[in-house]
Image (cartoon, rainbow, N blue to C red; front, side):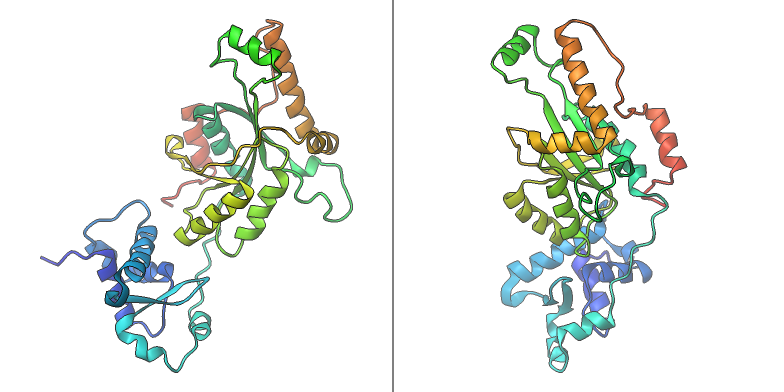
Length: 324
């Protein structure tokens, strides 16, 4: 019976034979190509992230007894410590040039195709929020690049109507604390070091008006990228949501920092410049007014939340399937 391997043992098999240091993704690609993944003792949902975590832990925690070394950063490349003498005549940059990171396969869908996933998650999760897509093409045309980062992909609002008693709601109204929450979301298929800064500060820019702002990503996020996102969150407050096809498995990975007050001036600019955002604010005002005047349910232009069977069909129609 063939011996079962750990992730680190699999990585050793690859690095013993390779001619240059590799990123953890390149190591995993070779593990799969050579069929070594079939010999692993266990394999989680995102094995490449498990491999990355174990490589970093080996380097960080083992000290002199570590089996691996990090040769370069951004991207980090790994090498066997036992072969470190082979690095003497080469600079780390040469290894990176010789081993380019494989470009991801072009997705069959685009970012806007992911909107119904986020809309369903926001409605069915702890956010309990109604969401609306903001179409950038409906914005007032401005001088080149001036309002490029003004508009988020999706905005949302959570109402307290369902969770508070009427007396409590009346108190909140009387003390000018309505407890409505406005959210802003910037949606991306993937985040990596190539697009991280632009995506993050795009979210910072177009979320300044809201109580909470989030980056939302569909593909798995590299552990090194997560470290940077947590550090940026401490300074700028933007959170991170990981979307899954199984909506119940979607989660807030990094909680956004809450702004207690809204940036009314920016909201006014968005209302002026984008008809979708104007409808969003109108719907909020109408729903609040209808509640306090006991009018009952009113129609609104929030994005539709797909029922489970419709949602499954949508995923198939749009080829949104990580198993493909």
